[in-house]
Picture (tube, rainbow, N blue to C red):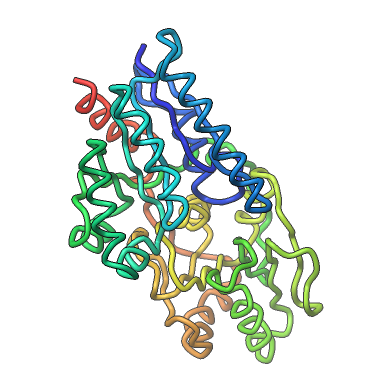
Amino acid sequence: MPKVLHIGPCDSPGGMANVMRILAEHPPEGWDAELLSSHVEGSPWAKWRAYRRARAALSKLLKDDTHRPDIVHLHTAADWSWWRKRRFAKMAHKAGVPNIVHIHSGQFDTWLEGKSSRKNRLNKDVHANNSTVVVLSDSWKEHLSASIQIDHVVNNPLDPLLEQHPSAKRDPNKLLFLARNDPIKGGQFAQTLVEELRLDYPKISLSMSGVEQGSTSSIKALGWMSEHEKRTQLSSALALLIPSKFEGQPMVALEALAMGTPVVVSDRIHSLPNGVLQAQFENIEDWKKTLEPIIAAKGESLSKVDVGAFSIVSIQGQWSSIYTGIVD
């Protein structure tokens, strides 16, 4: 049975790791899949060692006729994530194994535009390594096609286990923010927004991951949590807030939608299903206006957004066609 090896930050918190896990656990019919971690949380030295270990592991696999993968599937963001992945692509190509460059980052286009040399080097590497380039949506294909040839578009997959998660009682006063504590993700804006909302809705609160302590009594710190805990938070929230400066195709938004939870995102985010509510980036009044009907509904009679295009069956079929086309 042919095997695909997924390489990327599968042991680090975040949406990319979740995508890698789902794809590895649910490969296309007739395929096996394995994960190889190339990243860890921690110091630059710890990250460098993780990268070196992954290189050594891939080198060993490529020389082993019994365990050698048929495809190397690379998951990359921008900047240093790409510089590491290009070396894996080169190793695979040199060994005669096809490779896929799967771009996840919402800032890949901005990063490329930062220096013209990046675009030239990227195209040179992709061509030299005969890489198949995949992005998350038609919108990202449109954004990036001026810089690099995009071969395929495949959405992020939803974990089928979401359907088995027990429903939690929805809290009509709980807004939710699930992301790392990074200015790009808009955590501080979400906290300010909730404080403004409490002037009219005194019981509204914000449950927030990525922090260990709330700045006020209205902020409930969740830290980092298990997948089960995250899904419980999603199913019990009134709405999920994603006020990020940019995102690729946030997995947490898809998960919330699959659980019937409304999602409000900044207008800097795209590649999500129709029906996801948008508010102007860092515009408090526009966010308040967008959230008020949701708050008024108290979790009742909320219209659901169709996420069928992100089902594992749909995604498996697309990857099956890509994998088969590469190895044939």
